[in-house]
Image (cartoon, rainbow, N blue to C red; front, side, top):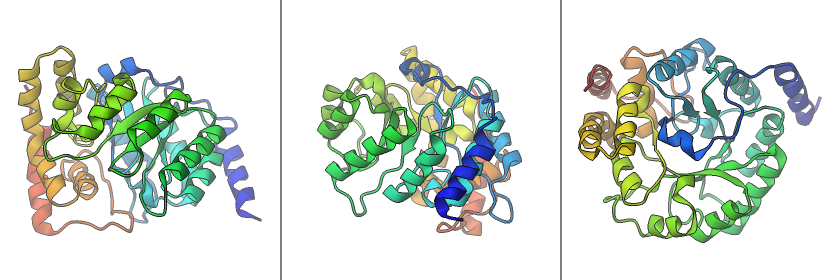
Length: 325
């Protein structure tokens, strides 16, 4: 039996008779004003298999805190997900998410993998899918062609993730948006001063800021949503204290910037550890060490943290979990 035969059988068995309970309609700009876009880790068991029960615990924790949008991408380490487990991942996310929750899986970053994943996704009803970025062995025209081909196969606009300079120009992003290929843009180029960002300044003149989501957590969100008029923000630390992150979003929308700044500072200790050690690894450990869910071992090619780092992460995560205004 060939690889494509396996893909087709997986599609039929997992999705042919499945009635989705998650949100299946397109994600609208208005949703970013109501919910932080959470970027959770992906829980695995002792055998490194995706664990439905523990991932459901993370999702319930987020939903109980008011979050209704989930993005599975870098924090879930989908850069290294196996194609043979991808159909199971989609089925689990669809099955355990709430009826009012929008779930966005990711594909790639290699072209071959994303197109094989597209064959599985085209029969599902996820509202959109994010293409993971890479600067390895690519050109901007090649990226744009690959993005177009992926969208053609899945039959719905996809999320463009701009993570670093040289991946795609503002002009290239605007072209994909004009052609109706982009659901929204996740903007995540890290700057020493988020207010000083010539790339983003150009991007918002070419693309409606309502279609651009701040993609680096709570720390630059206030500046991104005020100076650059971006529409909402993604967060990993929202997985620890979703209600508090939701309050920050509501404060920004209500123009209560003093309250938003107060909340931003509460998230800073855990974010500082993510920046110091590794964003994905620290969040994965933080969710477990705070007692929210058992996330399991990191999927290779990542690894765990030292015992001393774990102690620091545990302290910051528990303090964040227990904070309120």
